[in-house]
View 1: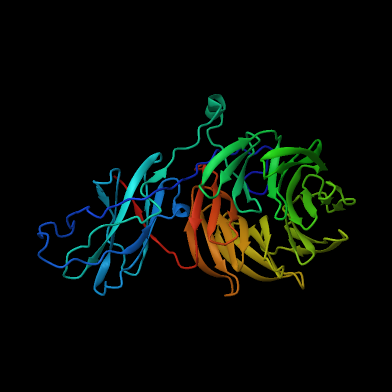
View 2: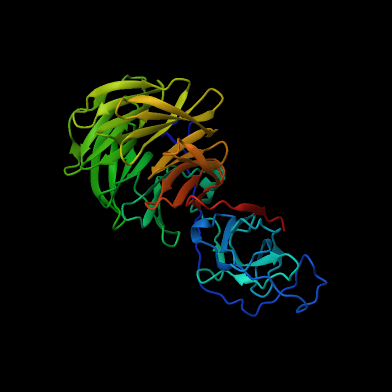
Length: 466
C-alpha cells in the first residue's frame, strides 16, 4: 500500500514487467575497420593503439532499452585519448558508434536501443599520433546481447481498458535465486530467475493483494490480501516449488506491510490501526494486536534492535513497539514532513531510516537512532521519494519523481555516492545479498531496471537516435 503516495486507494493497478537475458561467445579477431576520425589515413602507415581488455556487457547492466559496456584500459595506453564503443545488428557490420569516451572512464551506457533486438558490441582505443586500435569484442560472456520485447498481456480487453498497469512490490527469496513481483491488478506473482533474468512463470490464486514479503529464513513468501470491509488474510507460497501451501493466516482489515524476524511475522493492519504478531511455527496469532490511533493508518514496518518501527502515514509519526511484548513504547514525530512513505533498518539494528516527503514533495530521509529512539539526522534526497533499502553500509532511496535511485554511504555521514537512473515512475526496490545488483520496478514504463553499483562504476550515457 505504501508504494503509490499520489493516491491512496484499495485497488492499485500494476503492470507486467520486461526482463533481460544475455549470452554466448564471439570472435572479432579478424574484424577490421577504418578510423572514423581520420578516415583518409591508410592502414599500416602508423602504429596502432593498444585495444582495451576484458570487454564485457554485464547482464545486470542491461535494461529495457540500454546496454552498458565495460572494459579495462590497456597497460600500454600511455597516450590514451579515449575509447569508442561500436555496435550493430550484424557481427561484420558495426554501423553505430559513440563519441569518444573520457580516458578515465571504463564503461558506457548506450540508450535508446530497440526492444526485441540483438546487438553485437565492441570497443576500440584512441591514442595520440597513432592509429585507432583494432576492435576488442565483448569478451567471453556475451556474443550477442538480446533485449527481449515486453511480456505478452493475456487479456487484450483489459489491456485496452487499463493501458497503464504498475509493477510495484518486489522481494528476493532467501536463496537469492528468484525474485517475485506482485501484480496487484491481475492478483498474480511474476517469478523471475535472477541467474538468467528471465520470467519463469506467473502464479495465480490471490485476491486484493496489498503487499508481499519474502521470508529470509524459510522457503516462503507471504502475500497480504485485504479489504476495508472484511478481515484480511495472508497466503503462504512455498518458494522452493512456487506453489501455494494452502495455509491462510487471519489478520485485521486491510493488512498493509510486514517484516519477518526469527519465528515471527509482524504486520500492520492499516484500516484498523493496529499491528499483529504471527507465530510462523503455527501460522497463528501470537496474541492480541497492538492498537494504535484509529486515524494513524500504519503501513510500512521495520524490525531493529528487538523493536518494531511502524510508519503511521496519516499522523506523520513512527510508533515504536517492543517486538517481544508488543507494548507500544513511544512515538517519534517526523517534523517538517507531511507524508511518510517507507521505512528500512540497518542490518546491525543501530539505525532506522524513514522515507518522507515535505510540502513540495521533496524527499527527506529521517535517521532514527534505535538506542535513544530519536531522530539524529535528516538527509535530503530526490523528488517524490517512495521506497528504500539497506545493504551493508549503503542506503538506497527510490525517487519516483526523478526516475532514479540515490545511493548513500552511511558511515561517511550519509554522503551521496551515486545516483542511478532507472525507468519512469519507479516504485519498489530489492537489492541482492552481495549489495551489487539493484532491482527496481518501474511503474509507468512497465518494466524492471537491473542495475549494478559496486562503489566505483560511473558510466557516461550515450543516447542512440539512429
